[in-house]
Image (tube, rainbow, N blue to C red; front, side, top):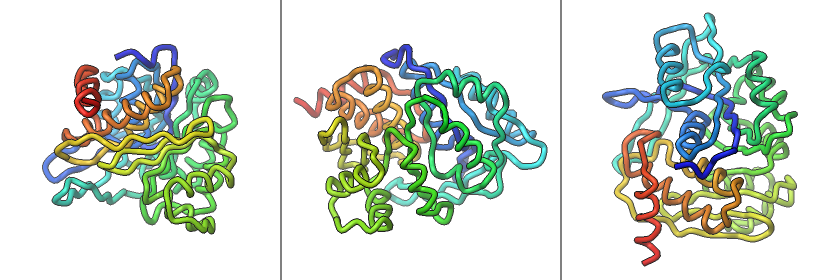
Length: 301
């Protein structure tokens, strides 16, 4: 897959181990987005921090083997590599217990990180990394770059405040919510609306961000792009687990939109990618281009 050719992306935020009942897998929303963008042909670097421990070394080795630039993943003696205990319910939906403090809470930018961010076309960042002042200040520095800024809202109680979320939205060119996140944040901002589209327009008006998407689980997603709303109703899939499905959706959507695909083509492609990730275990399963195309075609037929 190489539809992301010529796109230079930087993802900033948490890298960690998702610990399941009987195994652990590398994860963290920004890393999941970065890894999927890499498979789509983008040139991607990850800015984060791990502990100087076995878990940290294993993350760097694995990320490097998957083709991401790792010189901006710092190591610290003072904090352990991030761990998240993942619990799946009977439908495969995940809930998370996130260790604090972790190394990724204490990201201090090195010269290499500053350089790759300055050279990037796209910066992907989330809200979870802002739970600690150290990593939040580093993000504020990165937000001064000229890159197209993609804010992946990732609400994990109790690790967020509405004041910081609003600041992060104002800094963005593109915002990604799930449906619950959109409604919760809109309500906190005194929205009078209850519907998704009305609240997308409400957020656009309040933040001056006119590009955004809202995922709706198995019911697909909505995309606001250049003043219009586009929709995909979702693709049928037997869910293995939902870990990373939204991250891969975002990677596919942004890559498609920023390489000139039509908005409808982009959201169809992204929803197919998200569904296929939900249909396989873990956040970063291998997905072939033919599988994605077959899923899109099957629904159209």
